[in-house]
Amino acid sequence: MITKNYKSIFSYLAALTAALFVVSCDQEDNTGFGTLVPTSPTLTVTTSVSNKSLIEDDSVYEFTATLSTPQLVDVKLFVTQIAGDAINGDDYTVDGSLVIPAGATSAKGKVKILSDDLIEATETVKLQIGDNLTANASITPVTMEFTILNYTEGDLAIDLSWALGSVTTDNSGNAISPTAFADLRLLVSSTPDNSGDIGEADGGSFETFVMDSSTPNGEYYLVADFYDVNSEIVRDLNLNTTFNQAGLINDLSYDFPAALNSGNSCSTVYYVLAKIVKSGDSYTITALGEKSPVTAAPFIGTATAVVDEWADYGAGDQTELLPVLGDPFSFIIDTPDFMTWIANNDTAFMVVTIDPATGNVTVKANEYFDYGQPGGGGDEFGTGFVNACTGEINLSITYDLAAWGLYPNNALILQSDNF
Image (cartoon, rainbow, N blue to C red):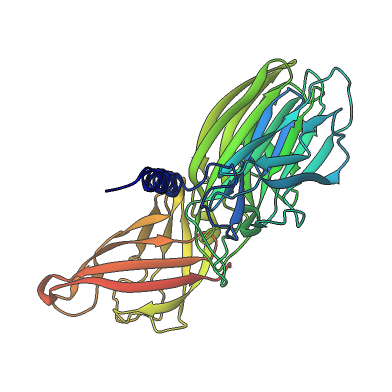
């Protein structure tokens, strides 16, 4: 028989066991009785922008701090201005600290760029989010940088930013930032190319150019090209342009995927982003998205043979590259006089026609090549590509020589001597 006292003890133990079971399931109730084990978490910060040029328009930009695991105590990180002449409270606002509450894994903060009616010089601010004052989590600080433009009503601010087409890392496995990979120029041109430059922006990061109210009325073209690039890694660059005009145009944005490629980064390569028509203080903007055409002009002159599987040329032999009158996208590969085994070397040649959008080419003989033996004459044709930055002419030629037979896809590589 169980006595009254034993029944009381039994009831107490049962209740205690149930309570422990509830706590073990809940793990953390933030009352001091939880079972969450303290860890050494990592704290990462993501930002809505890293580098931004903008007008004073009360715009807001967020940042988010995220813990790898929840903690028993609050985790606090600090926000400090580390560069620039903008003043917190006058030109922008941001909280000086951000708290991730105990048991939570993230918190958001925000930066607000304040609007005012004062005409001021351009101001900048660089904010660092996180530092070594965060004692209970490891953090790599990140920055948000703003260029605050205080232009007048008739000015048009133009921002150019870019991103790599795919994630690219250095030898240590760290992601290479777009501005470390490539330095681009932003041009306003009177012509739809980079030759009519009337003004440009070329800083150390993303570019900003302001067309001010004193710019004459007319048609202009917005053009991007390379100032410098990592030439060892070939990547597409995706471009973005954003337009702002106080009170009229607010963050009008256009994206241009794969607009430029680091494998073709010489002065003849550019990208036409948009057409701008200015009339007084009014701007009409039309996105264009046109790559620079590949023309024959850079190749005209002499070229040196690098590879010829058909063996008309030996390595180092030279030939003339001649223009085709009235056709800027074609050139002639002359048949040199030393090729005496070709009976009609004075009149026979190959015409290379370039696709201006891609640099790919087609090749066609103007007449049959007569190799001087019975049944040894015939057609020559092929495909390939040219590189307007290196001068390479890379062709695959088929020789259809009647009784001698068909000989397809013979490599012929010439190097223009202009490069």
